[in-house]
Structure formats: C-alpha cells, structure tokens
Image 1: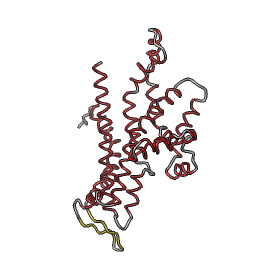
Image 2: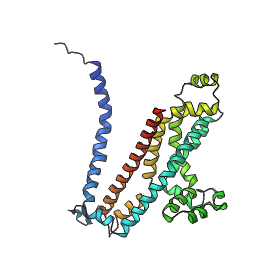
Image 3: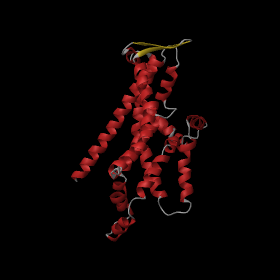
Image 4: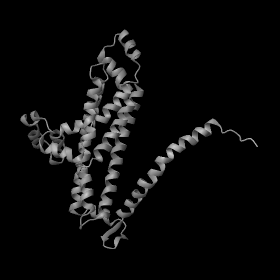
Length: 293
C-alpha cells in the first residue's frame, strides 16, 4: 500500500515545531517550574535546616511584611529609584545608540573595528567589573563634578528625585556601556533601508537632516520599541541593580529568608510589567497620533 505524501504545509508545521519544542521544553523545565515554585514560596514560610526545606503556607503574610518592615521599606525605596532612573536612562541609551548606529553605518575605514569596540562592554562589563570601574572613578565624566552639576541637582530637587538623577550623572559612562546590543539592532535596521530612497529624496531637494527625520527615524520606529524593551529588561536584571541585590541579600537572611525574598521578587516583576505597559501605551498613542497627521 503506497504511503500518502505529507502536505507541504503540514511538513513545514512539523519542522517548525521540532525546532520550537527545544525551547518549549527548556522553558517548561527551567523557567516555568522555578516560576511557580517561587510564587508558592512567596506565600509560604520557608525554613532551611539539616533535614532540608520546610515549607508552611502563610498566604499573604510575606507581602504584608514588605510594606511593614524596614527591609521591605528599603526594597520599595530601591524600586522607586529604579523606576525614576528608567525615565532618564532609556531615552539616553536609545538616542546614543541611534546616533552611533547611524555613524557606524557610513562607509568609513575600520567600521568593523569600531563596531567591535562599542560592543565590547557587553561582553566584559559584568557586575564586579563595573563596580570596580565605578570605585576607580571611571564611570563619571570629570567636567560634571567640576561644573557642580551634582551639587546643583541635590540642592534643587527633593531627595526622592535628586538621588536617582545624581546616580545617572555619576554613572553616565556606565549607562552608555549598556548600548552595545541596541547599536547592533539599529545598524541591522538601517541596513534594510533601500539606498535609492535616500537618492530619490536628494533629487527632490531633501538634505541630510530632512532625510534623517523623514526616512531614517520612521524606518527605525519598530526597532526603537524593541530597543526600549531590551534596555528596560537589561537594566532591571543587572546583577548590581539595587532591587536585585535586595532580593539576593534577603534570600539567605535569618530575619527574612526565601519566602520574603520571593515576595519582593514578584512585586518587582509586577512593577516591571507596569513600566513596560506604560512604554507600550506611549508608543501606541504616539503611532496613533502620527497616523492622524
């Protein structure tokens, strides 16, 4: 009996799922299970002793402790500082990445070398390395301190705003080091723009500035959203982030433990979802307003 040949669409679907199954299995085993375990721990009292891990369900007691204990107050303070810093850091990194990407997309000698130089911090800039550089004073620009910008910020704004803004200026070089991946993303998007589009614009009398705003920026619109999401996640999961350090430190503290640490981790996750949702909403409203024009 002849075997009926498989339809092309079905064959392509099976091939796609064969590749996706690797990721799906890895996600279920290495991400989904720890995720639900963390959620269970956040509503439990977790005790480590010689016999292993003892878990007793306490519902929302750990979450209540976050809002009523000094450890929880310090964590919430670090999260609020991070949320304020994001407002300034994301535009700085995005604009810097676009400028460098446009420059590196030009036909210049040593273009590949300069691309590697800008991407190098992504490879070597781990938490301990950046901490050491900050300690040695490499992270800041000397003229910022000489001009008294930090003193002006601290004397002008309230402590809630002054602290995160001062951190941005005192670690400005480090912030720019976080733009390596974004630069590559924008270069990839720029290389997809047809060069004849620029030539047609030049024939119509458009200069470099008009071409940049009318052709380049609209072509990078979708990649800007990808870059913003990546930047937020990258900054939020950085090992030296104050909120991440609070989660790590409370995990093995006698006064708090795994339950409290899991609770503040989930609260941190909720804050990140809200921040990402706000940025998505801003992009949606911007695109809708642009479409009406």
